Amino acid sequence: MTESSTPAAAEPSGTSVRSHQVRRHRGEGQWAKGHFTPLNANEQVKKDDDGLNVRARIENIYAYRGFDAIDGQDLRGRMRWWGLYTQRRPGIDGGKTAVLEPHELDDEYFMLRVRIDGGVLNVAQLRAISEVSVTYARGTADVTDRQNIQLHWIRIEDVPAIWKILEGVGLQTTEACGDTPRAMLGSPVAGVAKDEVIDATPALEELKRRFVGSKEFSNLPRKFKTAVSGLQDVVHETNDVSFVGVEHPEHGPGFDLWVGGGLSTNPQFAKRLGAWVPIEEVGDVWAGVCGIFRDYGYRRLRNRARLKFLVADWGAEKFREVLETEYLHRKLIDGPPPPFVPPTQRDHVGVHEQKDGRFYVGFCPRVGRIDGATLGRIADLARSVGSDEIRTTPDQKMLILNVPGDRVEGLIGELKALDLQVRPSVFRRHTMACTGIEFCKLAIVETKALASDTIDELEKRLPDFDTPVTINVNGCPNSCARIQTADIGLKGQLVRDADGNQVEGFQVHLGGHFGSDMDDDGSFGRKVRGLKVTAKELPDYVERVLRNFQAEREDGESFAAWTVRATEQQLS
Image (cartoon, rainbow, N blue to C red; front, side):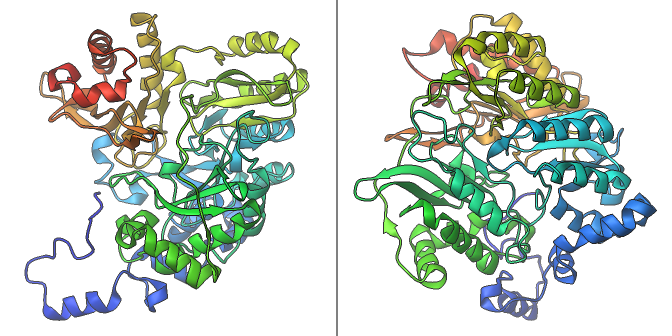
């Protein structure tokens, strides 16, 4: 599925004048223009019943009667409001992903997404997730690039018991999926980082308290992604709304406001509105931005229903004007010149001193994949060094905070014994992968095991390679693993091998990156014409390109910069 750039694109031949009149009358399905009639099946489902209401049916009906009793609109729609997606039935190859009907792809098990706003966990919470994983999810657990933890093989009969365990320690799955405000990204080192402009924790807590589970925003055109950080470590450029820590020359520390970012098949970096927001106003401003999306967002076509399309059509100036005049009823304070990413890694892996003299220790699960028993062991290790704070990151990594200096090396050794590297290779540190065909109904190829095996191969073949190069592996075009902003982004698709057989493979994106300084606003990179690699060829391809980079780069040149001037032969 591709996203059309214009609402009236590609009208079928023979379209009548009456059809055009109806199209103009219906517009884009924007509520603020009086267009409340559902224009597609998804909008009809939400109008029929709010997704939040399905919890009662799960607890009182489906958990007792089983999978076959679940209403189809609940199964493939409203249950997402409580973090539940049906997972892919085993044995269905990628060539059938876009061919089969939804019920043919459904397994009778669910993926359950545990919402972890800001990536903040304590020991009791991590132990609870471990318990759920081991008891109800066959030991599965994936740390996502939205700071959540996903579990698989969940039976509908077990969901109420799972909720009881999670909610007993303050966790929830509310609006972890669906057309809702999804889990909100926050700095994994909020409150402890030496260089943060402002601790955004109170703002995140307010947003969660006021708006998660509120029917005020439980029917949005599509998902709505938020990031709030006193640093620049939450990929703010790809979120629907972001509050980024900045020092105002007159008003002090606060947040720079960005809107309209998103990737998938029509990527767009967020636009800076030029407004400065004090921490006590973040909640109201967030509600204003989300309200604009709810009221003016495009609901006619699902592939144009993200905020980025409205922002692209309106522009930053009009968006700010509507926010101020219709939603806040006051002017925002103009912000300083935009902040830019400091020349440091965003992933927080390694040992770092906190502002209180203790340390946080960041480590790498393999492309986010971990198991329930290991989560429990991480909780035990945190407690053993006197810490009650564990964080997940937007790069599928984890941290233990508040580690005394004399306990750091022992902790590193204990983590290494669990295959959790604190001092990893470049490849372990900078490779991400989405869920892939193993569980995802949208995927075309396998990702997690392939990415892990590729890490092993590159560590053997290029043991001394030390330049940070991100490798992001995605099972379909939707870019859950942010392929357009990776040095080497791999978009899963079926390709032909040397013998003409259709096999799993990837289209290659090269040189994608976020902005790094005043002269670099970031880029979605480039694609070499016709360049595709099979899954089997992937380690050979990456090794070849990285060796070309090593041979041809200039002093201090990044991989992304090199790809701009490299020849197609050097990139192939």
